[in-house]
Image (tube, rainbow, N blue to C red; front, side):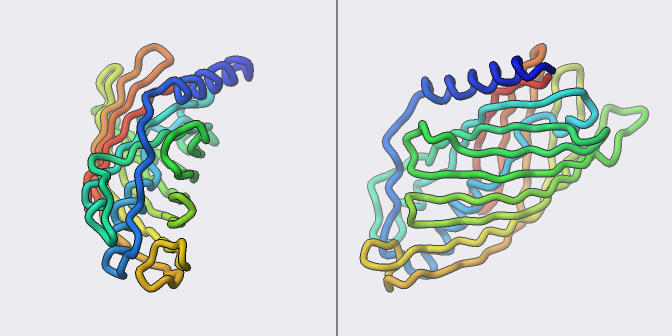
Length: 247
């Protein structure tokens, strides 16, 4: 893939973000007790963790680079009932740009980050490393291991770091890939205190939670473009979609 084609695709992703539908930013509830903080971390910390969102077969098995734009939806109804409560219902929606590169035949790396041109007052970033360690000889089944880590900031009131690992099984049929898997995820959240902070006692507090989760996704290839849809099941179900290009 030439660098000119890569940058044209990257600029297209930026343009899609800028022209996408937007809505009012989600308000975070204040006066969070310890129990409220843990529930908030379950919603936002797990929900903002790294997603697969494409064909899990590693890029290292192909030649080239991947660039994509994802949109992710975190359910916020329970969030609005915590602490001092808010009027927000529905979902916390944000966009993420991803870039992937094959490192070796069956190993690849992806980085992701949120662009600044979006309504939600949050930033998200991270990376993942994938290893396609098994490919069946007589059936279109592959197994992929993935480790990942990242961070997120919500309105400068909650800082989250997350890290985890997944094992994914993928069945490929022509241009359709269906993948299922699961793993374990750890989220560490710092809740800012003080008079303008988010905690009930005005102290800055760190919470640390770990949870198993399951993932199900579908990836459809259309020439060099792909469309992926995914459901991640943590304490809540998180929905996400992605459009991208592989070269």
